[in-house]
Image 1 (cartoon, rainbow, N blue to C red):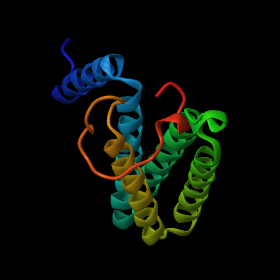
Image 2 (spheres, helix red, strand yellow):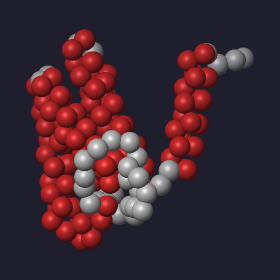
Image 3 (tube, one colour):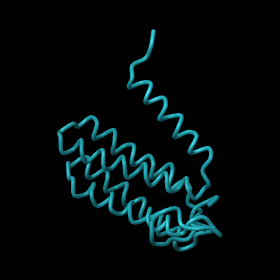
Image 4 (cartoon, rainbow, N blue to C red):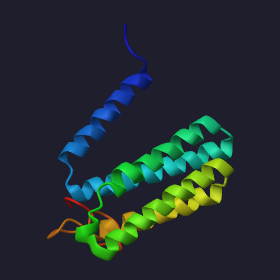
Length: 149
């Protein structure tokens, strides 16, 4: 008759995420994509180290999907120029590295990709909202490289 505590918490968390996405600015959505990708890579690392192959594969796949269908898809290479092209190439590189890490069980590659994602996230955060202040972390990257931001 009633769901488990875990399913209730999961539903609550999902509503919180959906509400956050609907209320977020384009800039904040990019930060959320970086956060999701880093979380997925870190999860893959934990599962790799514990020998949980199925969950490792799911986490790597999730990270690749976020990079491909979120970060790469949001790039506007025309408006972003060379920086947009460079970001696209970096995202492609990260996707390839994730595949290699998954196939060859190489945690150091997962750590490399997590580091790259964190650096980009910090740079994106440093930009802040145009005319506003940084969302919460330091560095820099042009807003024009991302569509709608």
